[in-house]
Length: 337
Image (tube, rainbow, N blue to C red; front, side):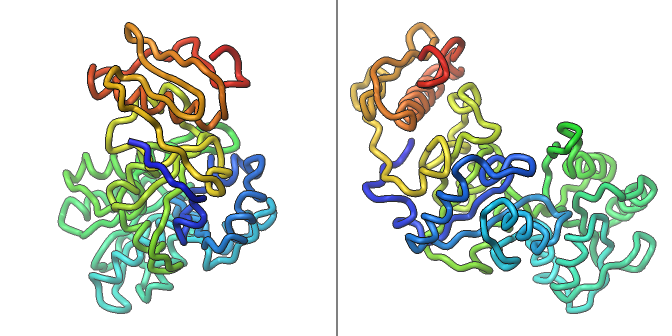
């Protein structure tokens, strides 16, 4: 399950591929401590790449935002699903090939940088590429769907069903993908997480022989890393809480686990799960599932509390086929637990 590391991850993995929202920032602000942790990781010699499924913003815009919140970044440090999608297109099509584009500025910039020609939905084309774009018109979506049904090759930047906005969680590009897919009865080639093209593109652009994916989402960040055969670090500053963690399927389980990006700078102890009774021990904590309910006793570091409950929860899920009840259980410092 979780793997140990006797040295800091920043020394074990020469490249950290960091998801953005929920890892580096939440909304417009840095996650507390993130700038300092990332500066220390860089100081230890670890390369940082900032990766995102969002295809709408050019890398330069993302880099400017990161720099404003205290995480210095250049455009070449940012890799987007738009760039990964453009790579998929360029690998198959001839230079200058016309591509119908439904999306925003980030997708258009990536397609042009790949040596391809964006065209309108009614123009002759060799492929369709789609990405999140708030100004994409419904009539263009309808026309694109008909063309896909009739055989036009389709690459989608990502399949995220929701995106965070200033007015709450809203439909993401995945809703458009599902609409076209159901109508045309065609599945697109997908560039973003959890598919591997975005991770491959990041390593290609930034370099690194021992990459580490760092994310807050089990179904995209962690599942994508496992599919690509890349080690992963799950941080708990975003969408994954206790209930989601203990219910993670095997393909969604991270290599390492930490409350925040300080996990890049620390060794990761081994979780002892050798008793055969489903109980797990690490760093002074002992966790297990009793009559379907997850229970923890002991004392120690908060990070080790999370590691103990994760491994105990996964062991129960694998044995019983259902997630443990976490009702009333709280991490140290957040109530009884």
